[in-house]
Length: 94
Image (tube, rainbow, N blue to C red; front, side, top):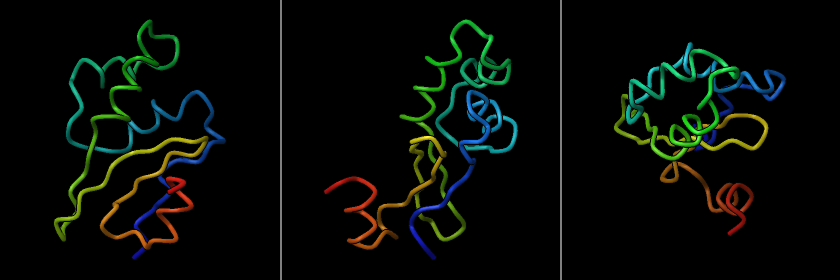
């Protein structure tokens, strides 16, 4: 299994956060931020809430691996412990 997975394609544009909120149940997300994101990009604090989700959200899979979020157009889930050195270099630039 790769340590990087695309969760949501960038074709969703400004709705990527809203699609994430509707389709995924990750930990580390406040109820207020989730509600704001679910309202869509017209919500006053949509982008601020999304920034907090990107930095704080995590998912622990059935094998105990912790996944985090990264967005660069597409929304990715990544697990550093499952990533190869080449993936880390390409993904993080290190």
